[in-house]
Image 1 (cartoon, helix red, strand yellow):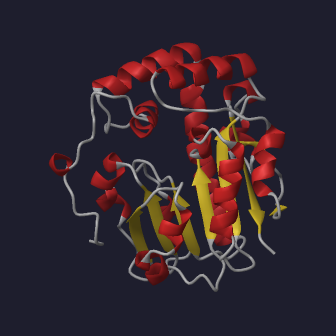
Image 2: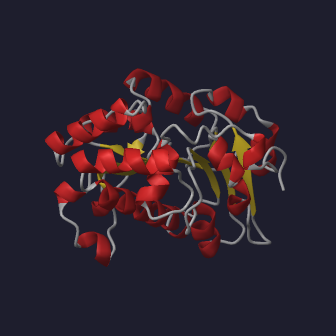
Image 3: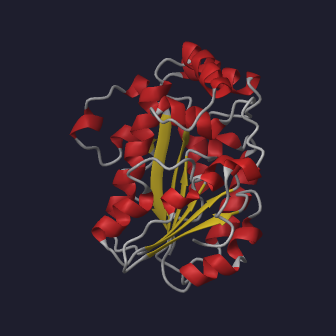
Length: 273
């Protein structure tokens, strides 16, 4: 067990009476790590945003296809996953170590509920390594300067920075770009930025109502247009098929059957040269 992850719920104040984005996500994915406040908030949000569970599942499948693609097609063996959320199989390390057992993964989150469940993220193939870092995305220096990151990842070799369904919880675009630029700066050429975030484009009225519901429950949230999402890749080469609804990114058969208005999350990957 890595330092900082051997904790129990009793040692942390999980504020189970207050709705939490990770637990709402868990509930809508069919998980069990949620509480009545989360389920009540989810019910209110889905009343305004009925396709949200479909969109969340499509996003989860995007993460798996993206991770497999990077490991199998681009030879990436190091992954830095920030905003990890509650463990939901297959987790990123399970996907990439299924392709290349020697892959190394560092998960980062600052959420006490994720820290409680970090044991499930720390399983690893014997050849690879998987670690968990308790740190805040808004403080990239704390991530980049951590001994644990340097122990697990060699920044002189390509790293995939994965930011899945986290950016819509930071409402300032300039702040998002500042953080991404800071995180990508020390990464070697050939490194990848992979992200997904809520978009207005496919179903703007429904998404606007759903975002308002999140905000009403005390969870700051924003939805962006495709051009706004593309600015997060400034200075990088966006790879095919570009920034698209996540079910359209190298789709499998199940994803291909989804209609665009059902999926309100855009995703894409880009390479650093």
